[in-house]
Length: 79
Image 1 (cartoon, rainbow, N blue to C red):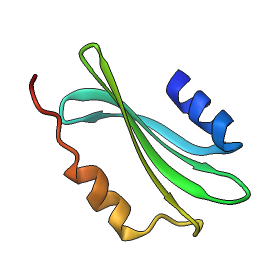
Image 2: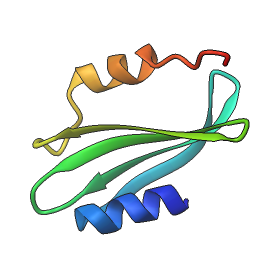
Image 3: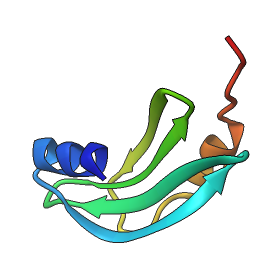
């Protein structure tokens, strides 16, 4: 939640939706944010001791179809 809050503070945005989920077996939080200038779909993944944040920003209020494809393309590789 701290990653989400810091991101929104920097973007002067507010959370419009959020849910906890799993991303390929790892705990994750998916959320959408909106500001006066932009909207975003965001995914924070906790993988062991690493935290990853994926962000897709867009101008429309609804996420483009490419956002889902972009998130699904993200892969976590073993070190």
